[in-house]
Length: 177
Image (cartoon, rainbow, N blue to C red; front, side, top):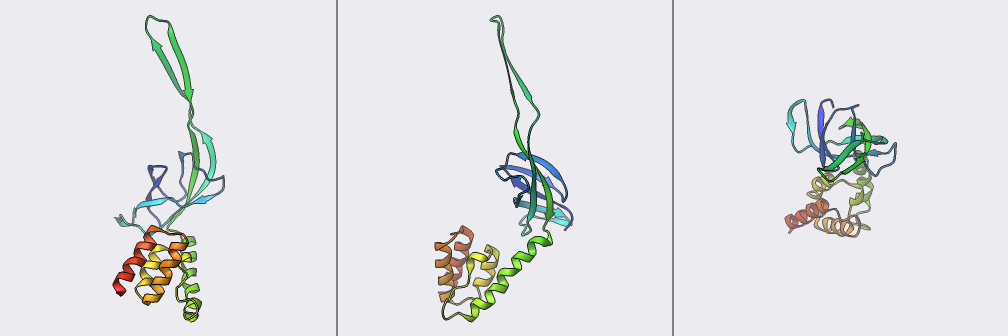
């Protein structure tokens, strides 16, 4: 997907394109690690999408120090002079893909894992919600029985307890009542 995206990293927003390198505030990830920042907007192909479902993949290239800023303090008629400096800790990242096909393949795998779970429905009535994204849970929950939704809700509460997944399962349970 060509175009641009607006991402949020460290409380700041950046407009990025594929292959672009930029300096951001220091991140905790090591060099060579990949990360997926929060995507706020995707545009470039017609109208911009304010609620994007695409992901942006970035790789940490290295950690650097910013340009030195010199600070001078002076008070007149007292002889007081003080000089200090500051260098920001920064991380250089490279945008590898915006909504790339690399990330679409792992999203398809949990759907394939769902089919064997449906065969053993009598032994374990709930599907494996830990391997599913919140969007997949929201779509699939409408087709589940009430027992499956209850089991999935219990599994999510005992596992990751993601707010979005819990609310999607609770609303699906309300629809079943």
